[in-house]
Picture 1 (cartoon, helix red, strand yellow):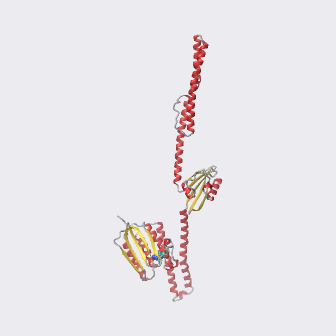
Picture 2 (cartoon, protein in one colour):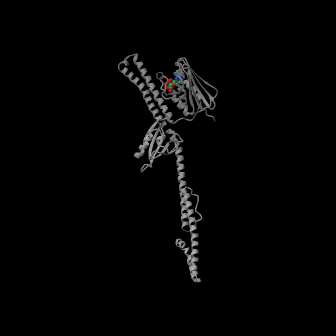
Length: 444
Ligand code: ADP
């Protein structure tokens, strides 16, 4: 409806002029007047339309430059009005969509920055589109490298660059282990993106696998150590059994002697198996620790009592001094007793005949501090940091000779740790050692 009316509107004054002119007897004059009025009106209308179009153009320009704020308010009629309100609506929707996309992008960026995994996204030409801080740390490049650089310029490791190329070309994921890179082992996966259809680039994800690689190595080392520890006494037992079978059993002297040796190795095996079981229970924390109130004074007195015969056998002095009253310790009485007796057992083993072993306990700050001091062979400084490791012995044959398993101190360390305490050693070769255990006291 608006279109014919708007088009006709300048003709109305012209027709009116013509009618008035004919009626007044001056048709030409009337026509001229009508035409003049029509031209004036057409001019006014054209100006108005032009200004509305200019406003629409201005609004379209600001929308295209990303500014959605201006709304087209003073065009409220006709086709221009309809176009204006359609543009308004479109701007509002676009603004909402872009806001939403911006928020999602920010959320994604925050998520990626907070991840422990390193992430790098590249385009089809291996130009870096995005990376997070973890990627810079793990793949060893500057954290302020601007995106837009080539992958091979930034990540120096050829394997990553090759895998990125391979994953892009094949459209399939590539996974491999990398390292050590600055003492770290990485699990790297390269995925083409998007996940379906033609690849537009790749996403590289690097995961720090140092801990798990170390764990695997420790496990392998542990299995090798256990096998070795088991094999040694078993070989000895087998050898002596064969000798006995070959005639030594009938020998009145050698027979009992060899049986005694076999028994010693069987004891060694039994010790080893029970220490291994204990260690595995402690490490898996099954049923540990009981949270009873343990009076360490009573524990130490008991340990001294049952260790005395072993010390006396070596003519050693084994003494206990308790300074003042001791607060209780929360924990498992059996495990704590086992830890102290392991330390005293070592002190007896590694102290020559006639030596002195001294046990003490005192309260210090919020801890109960237990010390086991001996006048034994001592530990060389380079071995001190390692004696708490499983199977670590300063002198393997001496330890075996004494029935040691190499696990006693690691059991001590585990027991103390699960009780929230610490253990340390001070030692001087030829003079002796002091093992010091601190356990948190029950304060209330
Ligand atoms: P082991 O069964 O060999 O005694 P441990 O784990 O108890 O195993 O001790 C590890 C090593 O630490 C021992 O083999 C020994 O070399 C050293 N060690 C432990 N306690 C003492 C000590 N009191 N004096 C000297 N050396 C010690």
